[in-house]
Amino acid sequence: MAHASSSGVPAEFPPADYAGNQYVDSNGCTFICAGISGVTNWVPRVDCTRMQLCNFTPTFANSAETDTAEADVAAAVEAPAVAAPLVRAPTAAERACAKLALLTATTPAPAPVPAAPLVDRPLLTLADVCEGKYGIQPVFISSSTGKEIDCGLASAGTSVAAAPAVVPTPTVDPVPRMTMADICEAMANSPIRYTGANTGKLIECPGMAAPTVATSPAAAVALSTGGAV
Image (cartoon, rainbow, N blue to C red; front, side):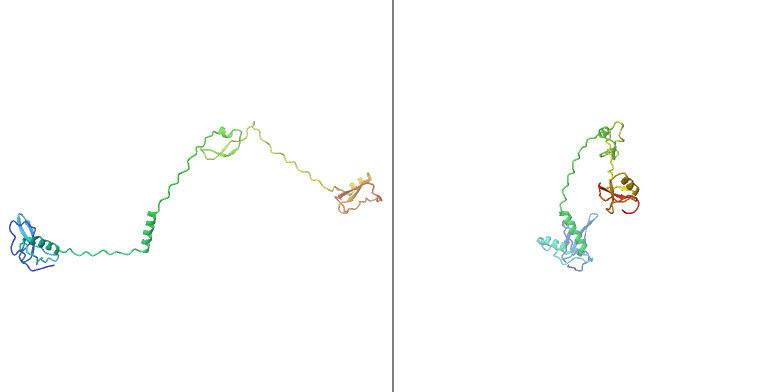
């Protein structure tokens, strides 16, 4: 940037018909046209430190160089330097978030699954449901209460199949139980002899002679009282 001392006014003023907004006098110092109340004033052009810009080619040194001089003066006015913004390196968390956002943006959304068509179920009246039925009907649900249909108790005219009666099976004792008195009374009135179920021996009653020959088959009995036979 060129600087030179100046008195603040041009060494010589441009012609009255000069239409430029910027003027360089013979000393090479630059001035700017400032018109106030119809009066043209040439004000020194300064830089950011308030120093006048000089050492440029005079405006009327060569008419062919006029545009070049104005361009040089314009280029000499430097804008204040602007510091480049600091770029901070992304953290690991920021890189992970950026990667996740990229995956989310590139992953196609799943195609919507069409809903199953609704099947219109026929509405039945209570009479239709309970015809020939009684009690709770678990396969029929009321549309108003959401509970199972109750057809109530069986009417008097409704025939209900009765459960089959359970006939107890009689228990047959393979060995009849008799008292000694019953055995002796039977043996006194009958030629049948009895053997003990536990001993397998012929039962002898007191006062009765023991048979020498078995003329009748012996029946096995178990004594209900008394000692073992």
